[in-house]
Structure formats: structure tokens, C-alpha cells
Amino acid sequence: MVLRDGRTISALTVGAATAVLAALTPATAFAAGDPLQRYARQQLRWERCDAGRPAAFECAKVTVPVDYGDPAGRKIDIAISRVKAGSAKERHGVLLMNPGGPGGPGLTMPVEMEPLLSPQVRDRFDLVGFDPRGVGQSSPIGCDLTEDERSLQHPYAAGTFAKDVERARAVADKCRAKAGDVLPHITTRNTARDMDVVRAALGERRISYFGHSYGTYLGAVYTQMFPQRSDRFVLDSALDPALAWRGTLREGAAGAELAFTRWTEWAAARDATYGLGATAEEVRKTYWDLVAHADRTPVPTEDGALDGDAIRSGYAAFVHLEAVTPWIVALKAAAVGGPPVPAVPAVVPSDNTTAAVWAVFCGDTRSWPRDPEQYRRDAVRDRARYPLAGDLGANIQPCAFWKSAGGESATVVNNDVNALIVQNQWDPQATLDMAQGMRRALHGARMVTVADGEGHGVVVAGPSCADGSVTRYLTTGRLPAKDLTCGG
Image 1 (cartoon, rainbow, N blue to C red):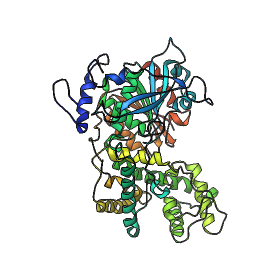
Image 2 (cartoon, rainbow, N blue to C red):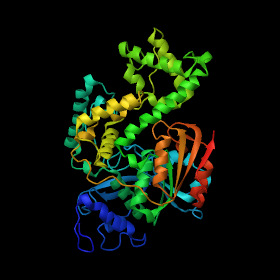
Image 3 (cartoon, rainbow, N blue to C red):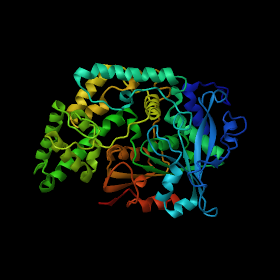
Image 4 (cartoon, rainbow, N blue to C red):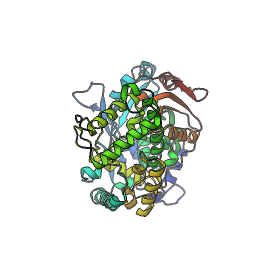
């Protein structure tokens, strides 16, 4: 690719070209002679998405280059959708949305989010969803992974580490064999570039955005790459961009330990109801005795027997105090001959989702260790520090063997773009510490924390005390004067 000053760049340095484009004003971005101009001028063909959905829910395809370093080369289609703004008079623009993941399809988000947003917001924005590249209806990738290979976390044990290494290597090899030509291009930075092509194809000078979980990182990367095209950004349950990505997997263990301690105190105060112990230490001992028993004799459940590692793998449930406690009580009873109980509800990812997760996690950054022994040492150390889940996030992953790892460096998010971060205090996946990391990276942002809020998602979970701040920001562009805490 040749820039206007005559310099040539490769795919590895396409970020520099993107910076040049981002520096242009919206009116001149994708100007005549620009290699991306052809994509900005494409005519979209809108059709009803599904006969079973409302007629107002429309879908189209946006063509983008596989490799932004070679805009004239191979192309793929990005599936997008929309529900138009309720009021032509009040319309402000488009609200692009991402549900998280990575690997999460977002095509149905307009109809799913519509009832969760205020009428004032729906009047002002076309709600626009999309399946990110490599996902769902946007040229999906797959690796033919077995069910065991689709699991994203595995407990560490000295006797099984060699098997863990071979599993990680097999996932990397299978993905390279099935999708090696596109894997280097399934990255957050390229998805952000796709978002900007979508913006241009929709005829918008700027875009507003709602992102959940991984979608907060994607949104932050967009603000860093295209600050002048970023309008009103709402980030729900935020990840710390400085931790992408191995740090994100490992940091969750610290939050799990805090939630577990809170649960032991809560359960102890209700010993008369649950019988797990009269003090936090007694409750803690009850739990670890259950795990040790399950390691010797797996506990029967309706979904199969659970060993101790499988019970630990349900650590995310500890943020939901009233839901997790009866499950622990039932497991304790089943361990000594009681009736089988349901396992912790879990979503087994599809092969497409898993493949997209590793493509993004491994391709976004060059920081993954290549030496399996580094993972072994980290898993041992993290398990000692965070007994509940430390090894699950630190154990070896396919990125150790990912041949296309790190085509570009991870994006350093550090800007003054306005954004509103909304966060539950007790989030098992995007912890409060992670959200505070996002807040530090986005100097122009404000953060609303839901005190004692439980679960992974604020706006996406329904009514909360943060709704007023979200509505006010999206309808007026005004952020709170300072960071806020609500609820409790």
C-alpha cells in the first residue's frame, strides 16, 4: 500500500496508515484517491432480516477488505442490522452495538436492546448491530474443535500439564489448518476498522456506540484509532485495556477471591437457613471440604458427576449470593448420598465462538509467552495466591503456539474521548478493578458504579440506578460532572 507521501507499508504497519486516516476530518476521510474510498461509497441493500422478526428490523451486508494493508485484495462481508430511530425530527445518528465475547454475534442486538433503552434514546438513534468479522454471518471461521478443545479454561495439575500443553498446541494447529489465511486478520483493531467502514457506508460523520464486556475494549480501541469520529460511547462492564489479553484471564481470579470471601460472610450470617457454618472461616472450610470430597468421589448432578475442579470452575456464581448458596447446599447433600442436583448453568461455546475468541486473544497482542514452562510457573503461583480460580486463568493457552500471533501490537488506549462507563460492584468477569483500569485509560470518561450490583452487565440486565445517567448522556451528550456510585 502506498501513502500519499510515497512511503509504502505492509500489513504489519497498517496501524500507521489508519492513524493518518483517523487524523483527517470526517468530511475528508476516505477522500477521492484514498484506497478505502471504494468501501465508503458502497450502496447498501436493506432487507427484512427474518420473517419471524418485526418488519422494521432490517439487515444488509457491508464489504470490507480482509487485510487493510491490501485494500484491493481479498474481501469479506460484514452482516449489519438496524432498527431506525423512532423520530426523524429528533434523530441524532446511529448507535452501533457489540454484545461482547470476543466471538459474540451482534446482529440481533437492535431488537434485543430496544426494550432496554428509554423511549428518548430510541427516538434519537438508529440502533445498529453487526456480527464482527469471523463471527456468525460475517464470514465465520471454524477449527473443527472437539468439545474438550472448546473449553477456554482448564485447571492446572502437575500430572496433567503435558496434556494441557498438547491440547493448546492442537487447537492452534487445527485453527491454522482450517483458517490460517484469515486468522491474522481477525483482530480487535481490524474490527474497529470495519466499524469505521460501516460508519462511512451509512453516511455518518461520527458514530455513537454501546458495548458490553469485550465490546467495551472494542469501543475503547475505536476511540483510540478514530477519536474524531467517536460521538457518545457507553461501555457496560468494562475491561482494563492494559491487561489485554492474558492479564484479563488471570485478573479474574483476584475478583473471584473477593466475591468468595463476601459469600462466606453472607452465608455465615444465615447459618440457621443454610447450615454451612456460623463463621466465614467455617463456611470456607465447608466449601473446600466439599471440593476435596469431590476430588475423591465426584458429586452426582443431573448433568453428570462433578469433581473438585469442576466445582471450582463455577466460581463466577459467587457474585450471586442468593443463587449460589442453595447450589452449594445441594452439592453438599448430594456428596453424602442426597439426590443429584443440577450443575452450574454453563454455555458451551460453539466452535465458531471459540475459534473467534482465540483469533482475537492471540492475534491482538505479542505478549503471550511461548515457553510452556512460563505457564506452569504462573499457574502454580496464581493458584497459591488465589486458590479458587488462579490456575484456571494462568494455565497454558493456544496462544503459546499461535503462528499468526501479534501481527500488530496491542492498542494502547490513552485518550480524552468522552465515554460513560457503567459497572456493577460485583461482576465476576469484568471486575470492578478492570473497569477502573478502563476509566484510567479514558481520561474524558465518567464512571457510574452500581453499589452491591451483582452480575456481568448493567444496562443489558434490565432496570438499574444507572439508567438515568445512560439516558441523559445518550440524549444530550452530557456526562455526569464526576464519577458516581448509585444504589446500595
